[in-house]
Image (cartoon, rainbow, N blue to C red; front, side, top):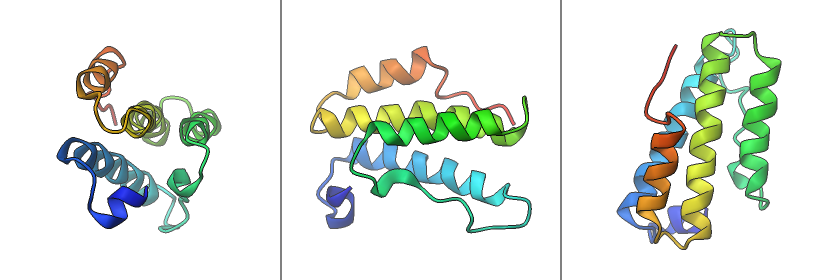
Length: 109
């Protein structure tokens, strides 16, 4: 995520990143009064670890809970962010299609 830190990423990548961070913040606020407990996996080098983390956390959450819904949504957006990173920020249409197909713009909870 070095390009984000240095401000050299594209406007599209910035938007995707901001949505991911907003979802992470919403999850952090649902930590039963333990704000700050959520640890973002975005600093991990293995990009696929991002969505794996969200998937595992979703499975640990109560079925149908707001937290589970947010982790499911976060998994979709982590994949979108990974696609942006792996395509050198050039595959906007592919990323948007991924989000549409997977209901990435729909948030229950």
